[in-house]
Image (cartoon, rainbow over all chains, first blue to last red; front, side, top):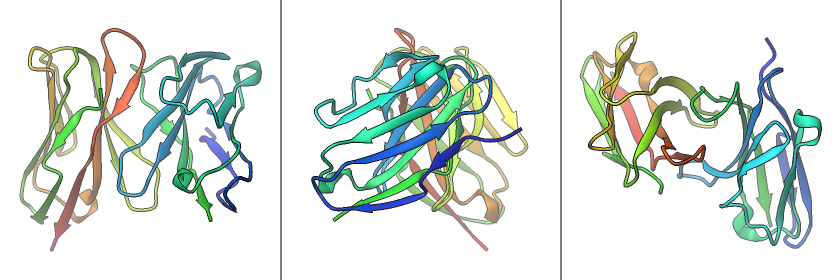
Length: 114
Length: 110
C-alpha cells in the first residue's frame, strides 16, 4: 500500500513570495490533516478535512494561508505572502475516517523563508 | 488546548524503564501516542479510546485515565531504538479537533 506522498521535499523562498505544497493521502482515507512543525516543537494542526469539507481550521492563519482538497483526495496548502516565521516542516497526514483513527504521515516539506 | 507532557526530556541507559505523562485541561475522547525520530515524520504507536483502557505494543504500553484527563506511556527494558521524541495526541470529546502534546525527548544510551 502506497503511503502519503508530499512534494516538494524542500523549498527555499524569500519573504513575501508565495509557495504551495501538495499532498496525496493514502487511497480510501477520508480525513486529511496539514500540520506545521517548527524546529523543537510538536506538530501544530493547521487544517483538517473530512472528504472535501473542513472540520477544523481554527489555527490556520487565514490572512496568508489557504488550503483546499478538491474531490476529497489530493490537497494543496498555500502561503501567500510568506514570512520568516513560516520557516518550518509542513506535514500532511491522513486517516481512515476521523480523529479516532491512526494517522499516517508523509515525509514532510521543509520550508525555509529567507 | 494543547496537552502538556512530562517530563520534557529523559535520558535512559539500555534496559531501564521510563514513564511519559500527558495531561489535558479538556475532557478527552481518545489519546494517540506517536514517536518521531530526528528528521523523520511521526510514527503511530497506539490509540486509547476508553477511560481506563490500557494497551501494549511489545515493551511499550499505555494507559488512559478519563477522569483525570491523563494518559501515560510506559517503556520497559528500553532499547537504543526507542530514542526519539514522543508525542501524545488528543481528540477532544466535544469534537473532532486533534492536538499534539508538547513532546518528550527520550534518549537511550548504551
